[in-house]
Amino acid sequence: MTDRLLTIDGLTKAYPGVVANDNVSFGIDAGEVHALLGENGAGKSTLVKMIYGLVRPDAGAMTLMGDSFSPPEPRAARAAGVAMVFQHFSLFEALSVAENISLGMENPPKHGELSARITKVSHDYGLPLDPDRLVGELSAGERQRVEIIRCLLQDPKLLIMDEPTSVLTPQEVDVLFQTLRKLSSEGTAILYISHKLDEIRDICDSATILRHGVVVDTCNPREKSARELAEMMVGSALHQPLRDAGEFGEVVLEVKDLYVPATTQFGTSLKSVGMQVRAGEILGIGGVAGNGQDELLAALSGETPSAEQTVRFDGQPIGHLGPNARRALGILAAPEERLGHAAAPDMSLTENALLTAAIRENLVNNGFVNWAKTRTFAKKVIAEFDVRTPGARTAARALSGGNLQKFVIGREVLQNPRVLVVNQPTWGVDASAAAAIRQALMDLAGKGAAVVVISQDLDELMEVSDNFCALNEGHLTRPRPTKGLTVEEIGLMLGGMEEEQEVAHA
Image (cartoon, rainbow, N blue to C red; front, side, top):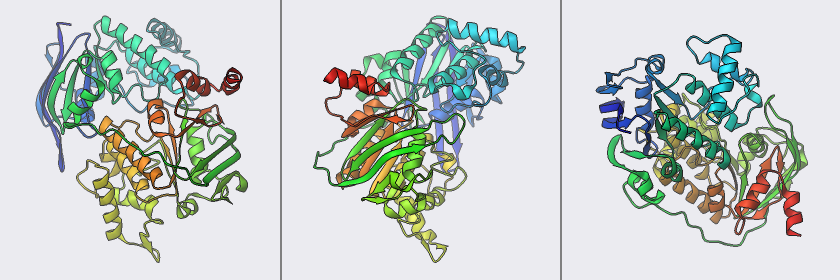
């Protein structure tokens, strides 16, 4: 790795109220896997958007393979040899793999030729795909393969990957890393963004650390511990979430024989789901993406009503109640999709605070919104959850993904719910913010709330939950005490093999 592929010299980009990147400089060599690390709001997304042509810098310059590089749009970046796999997939579920890939190409070949190329390239790189399968039928990991193969068909010199493992199983991560190592050995440079620091230490050759838009350090991540990397990012010691184990109270939330049909053609139906959550308990629910997590949260929050007796709160049937009625009782929820579901993109943080807190915080009187009180609540969320934003008037879409996540979780936690259901609470959130969110969930349970944490991050569930269930194809396993669970047992539960587990324990 001696040939400098990309040189970034003094890139600066400012927005009203914030300097996203301030005189950023570093380089990436051909064949290098280079990590870009930083807290949420540190400027990582803005930087890669400038490299990919989505944003124009205010100052500074870039050189790609020795030539001046200033792409006015992504098409120009792709033509120059830069490809990007985004954190959020941009695929049409009703179209086939080949049709989706064709839409991302400037001059796509005929269907037969493209299908043959997809088959060959996907198998060559260990990511086999059937070009004729509908994307809606694919798992989250297979959908990411579509995004990657779409990039590889461009023969990129630089591949940018933003949180590529957030929806993958450990086995899929291993496959992805094999692919990245093959690309690296062939001379493709990879700019890798992730908050999973153990993965950074495994796959990356070097790292550039951003803090508040400024390059503060560089290192070989293999020579650092995950904790040391996190502390380089935040500039201080990392807080370790702690919780005093206490006695659980009475059952607050009970679900029995819950059947919920899938709301979309490619969704997952819930089948005879049952569970109990007691006051002071955190119930962790694990599972690979697409196994009914969204449907379960919708059923618990009231977005999807069910038979009256299937969901009970304090012993009273509430299955028929909608979200507002459940919020009034103290049942709050934070869905996985933060932009568009948990928050309205073009509304300010103040307006987004009103959306779910109007009832519990008494923000509306006689049909009139008390905007002063609403702003005060939004500012309280911003302050207590360290949301990096110019202010409460800022639109939700202007925040980085991690900062918006902190706002969404904080908005619910600070309403002092009796029951809180969260799906992927720390998805795309840096190590420091993730620790703070997990601490907030533990503190909430410590005050007597019943908390349900749905997550694909098994380390997170092992850290925060008292009991653990797995969701597989709409079925929920019986709960097991989290303490003492082995990786093998968790794997069996995730695969829906609970019966075999019980036989093994007999």
